[in-house]
Image (cartoon, rainbow, N blue to C red; front, side):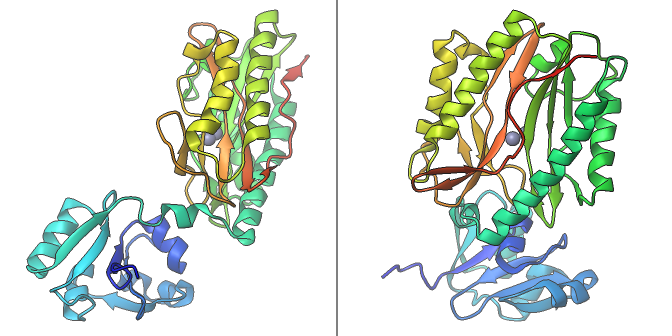
Length: 346
Ligand code: ZN
Ligand code: ZN
């Protein structure tokens, strides 16, 4: 028997609150306990919380959430509670200690991460719908991509294309990186004007129905140079091998290594400085990080990105990113568009 089974858990991270009970507002805390869950928010969200929250009693605080927790007796004051180590602020902790001087506060890392990572079929469908929307925008943007546009103008089209099709918002500021800017793994769009022969890296996604999409595709304005083609084939091979190997039960480190070995064997190991991928869901970046630095077991029904890259400073960079759903015997690609280099001959 787990002695911690009856210990209360306090959830303060909003995406986790949403995942657990459905609340989409900007202020609240959730007390989880087998005898009954309690959600506390402020007066602005009284109606919304009543409509959204499932599986917890809704409370509306008039004078601060923690003060309400104390006044309503949602904690005993003389017990152990688990809190989210990464998300409970020092201000929250000070408040807890003031209001409950004998409370034992036990910080827990990654309290809900594994549970959040395992998607239901409904969650997978929402991620896929967001991805389809982004793919429609990609087709439109590729059709209009030409020398003379600035990176910022292309980024603006990406944002407008998503919002016009009903996306809630972008899942992050779109990356449009042309020519040598593509060698910066996290480039921001600039006023650089696209030129004939440029490589263009496009990395974007949106939120639809709460869930995120994420994709990176590469275009070249004209015929690619032999070097661009060579590096593209290496990155594509690394991605294909990783997608072929990805399955639930393997470690994040082992999956990262599949792609990294392909890139290293081709002589570009030093030019792949980031991890292979990340979880996607209610947040654009979720646990697990698929990296040589982590050794987590990939859970069944997790949705992760597979995004190897090679970046040659001052020249160009290549990244290709797809979404996959992990199963015990392999993975299902959630990205429907081809991962081929888009050669746009004007
Ligand atoms: Zn991305
Ligand atoms: Zn990503």
